[in-house]
Image 1 (cartoon, rainbow, N blue to C red):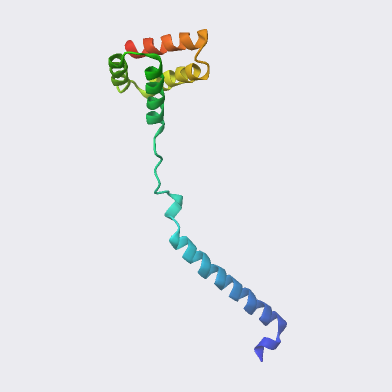
Image 2: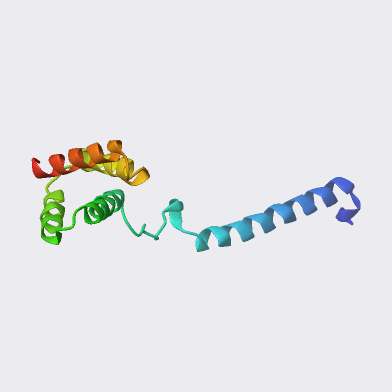
Length: 116
């Protein structure tokens, strides 16, 4: 009898939709990760990626493996600013490895590592 009123029908349907949305979204929120924190960690952090890039350039350009090993051991003593600088030089070396600019960048790279 009370559903004969069109406003009450509309409000009943509206409240049913709101209740359905609240139920389904609350279960979806409970399943998802809280506060958007991802449990997945990146494979490498930036410092490790830069370290690997520097090591690759050194191995590519230096034939003596003992020197490469000594230079990569010195990389751990460098701070983040120095690593970023050396990594930017490695980018220049790897972009055009057969040019005078790449040779100068490699000389700067080795000098920075040796005298650091």
